[in-house]
Length: 249
Image (tube, rainbow, N blue to C red; front, side, top):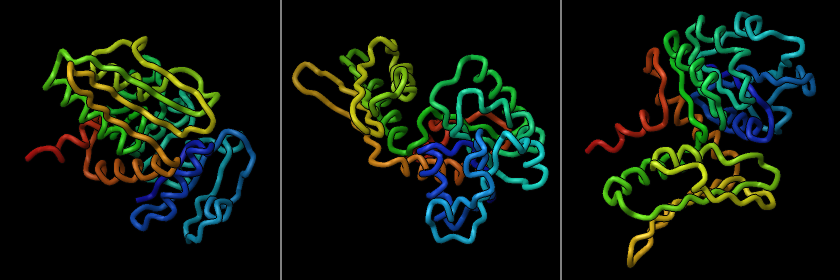
């Protein structure tokens, strides 16, 4: 399947690296806002031995409709920004291109837009697309169901300079019926991302911890999601929709 990647920051580069090294998917192109690196070949830039072109385009000189008409893809993966969805959403929906969004924070406006696009094509959104953290989320909800009155604390750690509370931590809080104010945030050094859920029982403590060692974990998550969306039709999906069948005995 052919993939188009939107966003080429630190995480976007790591995701591109993983896709380029996967034999079941092809990185057709990368779209970024500025014209820096425009017309470069992704594999060459990242130093990866690959036959894929993965040419880098700039939104300043190439429109998404033009790119999708000239270089059609099966899936668009978005690691850009909150408003990036507006640059390609309608064009992708009209062409039945599957959308995988890994944006951490969306307002209600963007969420509603995703829902409208899901009537035209397959749309997947997760504020954290790593497989491990979503496994943690699934397990945490299961444990809360077993012990609904247990004390719960959420701790999230990220690199110094990351703005706002982690979107993943907010999603965990929502899933466990906690408030955003209950999340403990730590910012230090170059921490890629760590999420911990502490369950405090009277005489014991259970801790669920997920730590991203490198940003390539996001690429592995993207591949897992893409593989599980191949046969999906129109609709709005999240990680729980994909993981649930694996837990059926």
